[in-house]
Image (tube, rainbow, N blue to C red):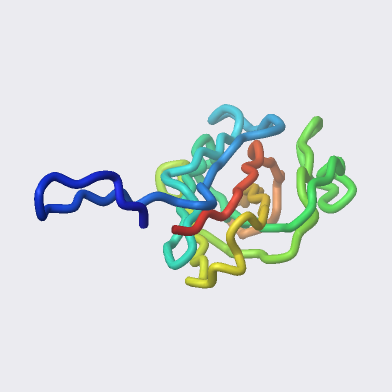
Length: 155
């Protein structure tokens, strides 16, 4: 909280962040007929708030796994899931997994960030892996989105 100036007895103040939140995208998604999986931020990762991201281009009959981690990686997804499509990459080291049910080829992932100033400046990475299923719920293919790097901000 900074005093920005005054006129007479009225004071004007400006509320600013000492650690701004930011999001950057890295890597590329791979996909199926719907197109490459794409992950975009729907806001910024602030302490005490819920960060949301939106993945699109997912198969119609699929589950989506939201992956959050502390470190980047470049691992062929076929090393983890043999059903993965060619050129799909796991772009981070998994620390937290969330399961989502996509609707109309898209999903909104959310990550609650505690209201702890000690998290300010911490970096997280996020990616979505789509698991395409057949009518009997057998895994047909796996595809991955690009990844996001989140720098947690605090006021």
